Length: 310
Image 1 (cartoon, one colour):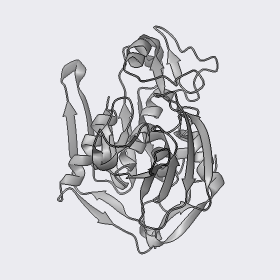
Image 2 (cartoon, rainbow, N blue to C red):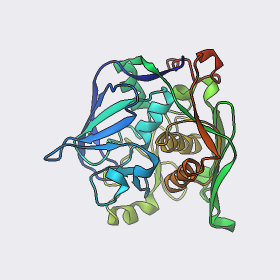
Image 3 (cartoon, one colour):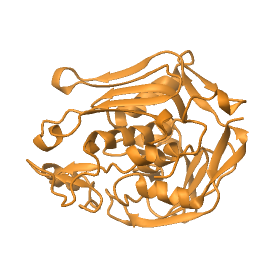
Image 4 (cartoon, rainbow, N blue to C red):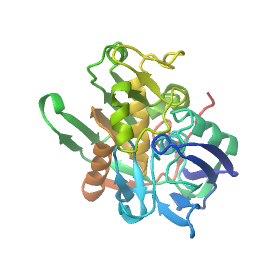
């Protein structure tokens, strides 16, 4: 049987929220089979649990935010996508996350720090079958047209593969790779995707801060780009780090809906479109089914083995 996974022991991190700028403590705890992912706002007078699912996403401005029942006015947790991406990369199914503020810390701006934390806690196999959402027929969402066109699609695939294409009218971004395909069969999430950092443009800083966003961003956790070049002294971690971060985000956004067996393809997509795609898939009973593997040898490559070290 291909089994569910959680962590073996408690692990903790302290950082700041990239949008709120507030200090936050994060405690990652093992969880029983079939728990899924649950955030607990332990800073509130009475702790509030927020289960992770596609319908719990209540805001997608610059990040994926979940709240109780998907109610924008209810207790929330922002910027969950990098932690969720790390969980997907390590094949985790169950985790309880205690958090002391309303935003997951940005740490170094990628998923690598979360991978490190989860690895140090250890991965534990559980006595319950791992469930997958298998895509049976293509599902697509589109917005805009011409220069504003963006779209995302899920199609049947025996495994899990993502292809993303970006388009920015910027010399520094255009000089890097615009399209990347990553297949989980490679087993190389930790080395090829996890280290890709979020990025931002200096021209957008004032607008973001006027909206109460980006208050914790710095060159320690964001690739900063001015009108012509990358400002970070160390440069890029990958030659195609911009588009790889978009795949990292997509992996996290999609893991909100569970483990997928699908081929994801996207052009200029983001958190909002990724969530719309998930909701459309899960609402169409003919487009998906839930599957398990009684014999893990029958599972697609890369989904049964524990992720290798860096």
